[in-house]
Image 1 (cartoon, rainbow, N blue to C red):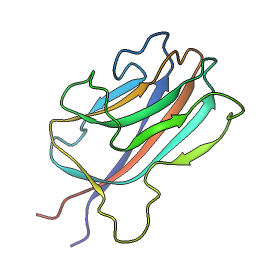
Image 2: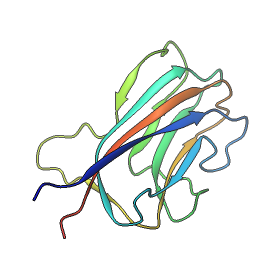
Image 3: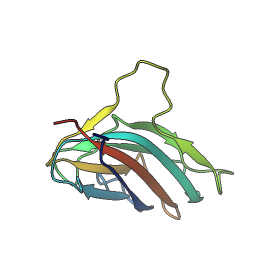
Image 4: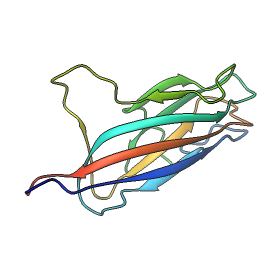
Length: 127
């Protein structure tokens, strides 16, 4: 039996102040543990402030977490750039997203002007 899978896009938008998940947040869309198989960060418009992006899973929609993306530069000449957040070597365990957790995107400082997208692909865990 093949693994069922899905995907979604989370819009990311810069903010003046660091507040924990101020750039974007989404509750696990399946309501059950799923495995993230691919994650891309697309930079549509870079931040005007010198800032970095953290993405991770938290128990609340405002948690500042960085277990998936840590300190990705999001200002400068980056328009149209795409980064793989899960580019790892072989035999590295993929991340399981707990059923009641949030995927949060947080800036390290002033991320005003930033616009981007987080593209996430996932599969259901085997029963």
